[in-house]
Amino acid sequence: MKAITQYTYGGSDVLREVETERPEPGPSEVLVRVRAAGMNPTDWKHRQNPGFLDRLPLVLGWDVSGVVEAVGPGVTIHRPGDEVFGMLPYPYGVGAFAEYAVAPARALVRKPAGVDHVQAGAIPLAALTAWQVLVDAAGVRPGERVLIHAAAGGVGHLAVQIAKTRGAYVIGTASAPKHALLRELGADELIDYRTEDFTRIAPVDLVLDTIGGDTAIRSLDTLKPGGRLISIALGALPADLAEQAAARGVEAVPLLVEADQAGMRAIAGLVEAGELRAVVEAVFPLADAAKGHDLGDTGRVTGKVVLTVGE
Image 1 (spheres, rainbow, N blue to C red):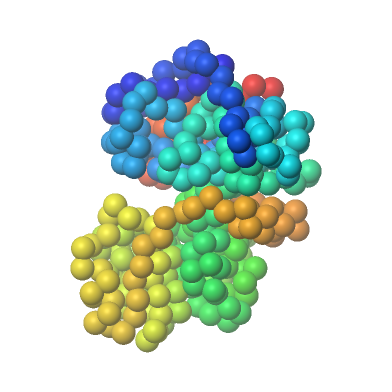
Image 2 (cartoon, helix red, strand yellow; image 1 turned 45 degrees about the vertical axis):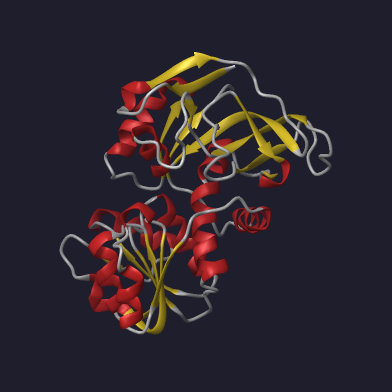
């Protein structure tokens, strides 16, 4: 099969399309013929540095949408020919930037029939991250005020939509040219982080922090007493963030996304109901994966970038 592989860490020029052996599914696993694979900031970060994956050669990619090619021993929930989507277990189950990928059967769910593979491939990792912050960790309730940083980004734009399905009042930070899109997705209030001080929107019940650093520290001042900041910017968090939060009577915790079939089923339900969609800025064929990385490296992607594979 063809796969996008790197033999060293660095810029997008380290990526190579190679012919490699097709994997075989083991017990409780399925082999998926990949049709689309979403790209995420964690992909370009792991291309540059070992991160969680200190192993080479490396095939990146966690988002996958495709067709079940074969099932391993003990699999009952999927059959060959099923169209499925989901996230390969983060971080060690990587390998979606290829013609075939192996996944635990219960990391995947049926792809909604009315959604194409590009749309389905864009959703899993970012939507699961947003779901696990807003629903599993924070239990957002109707009427709560939620601040989402980088609201037009991969996680952010999906978090806006999921928070709205929970009945929240959603405030997003984004550059002004992206405000119209975010209003369309349901944001109630928007702040141009380049010209406005986002702390003016205090108080809020929850902050979804995607940036870290000083933004995380300043966000603590927007929280109500007992409020929570949940950050997915694990590599950029100040060492004393938890202590600074406690001094203000609030809480700050990091979150790392996990493969979760129940979460994926809920996300698929929102997609089927028309309540959740991915904004896809660019689509590239697998052979042009480096172009997707170059776009990601700008830090200015609106929504998602997706690679297509095969037909």
